[in-house]
Amino acid sequence: MEVPILKQGEILIATVQAALTDSDLLQLRRALVEKVAKARARAIIIDLTAMDVMDSFASRTMREVAHMIRLRGAETVIVGIQPDVAFAMVQLGLSMGGVTTALDLEEGLEYLHRKFRTIV
Amino acid sequence: MSGNTVVENSPVVENEICVSIGADQDVVAARQKGRAMALDLGFSAGDSTLLATAISELARNIVSYAGRGEIVLRARKNSGRPSVTVIARDEGPGIASIEQALRDGYSTSGSLGLGLPGVRRLVDEFEITSEVGRGTTVTVRKWKG
Image 1 (cartoon, rainbow over the protein chains, first blue to last red):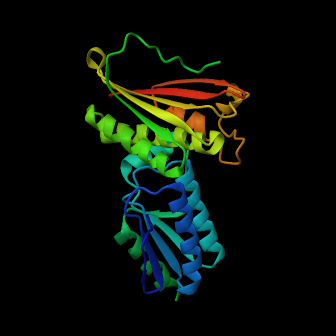
Image 2: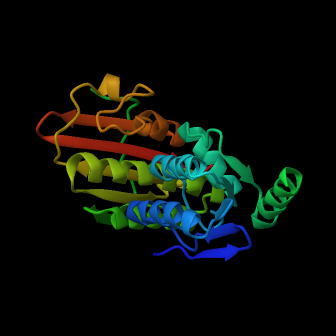
Image 3: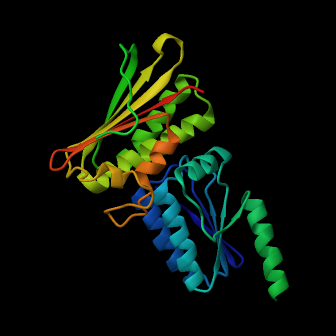
């Protein structure tokens, strides 16, 4: 299941559309790290609304994406983690570390637009 | 050695599914079947997600440590209160120290080591048996809230 990555201005948006296997997650990580440079994007948003479960592997991979993207000079915002999924993550002992999160795509875009405006 | 004991008192088996686990897409299949089973029994969406997350961790452990194995999902309406029992079974290398494996932060595969202690927090009952060179069986149960 490939995750489509769209470019909107200086932002890349990856929208997960169904449950992802571990190899799908690794493929997404690779694609985002490559595309962020190619597209000269300043930020990426990963929309996890359709993710049924965020287990230890998925959470770790998302943290790694954010770290790699940071090393490439851009920012990551994770959006759409559902309440039940968030609850299970906390019970499991997982955290998203210092990764920026937002309620949904709209909030994520607003956060980035606000941030870029203040920088420029 | 075992954790909390999962008591088997003449169960009324309503439905049983066996998912063979050998690749990462099986991890997703197992957790989706487990969620569907829980929802069928009237579990809340939240509890179904907790169960699906536990299944995901157990199935991944099979793939990463043993290569292959199986997950049995058993739905029960034992005299009223429904439950789902998950049996994750493999014939892999086994766990030398269960006590250590149940401690937060312990891992032999370079992963985060949150696997088993985390799974234990997601479910109501948890039991593990393991023999080095023979394999591991983890049995967990979640009751409808």
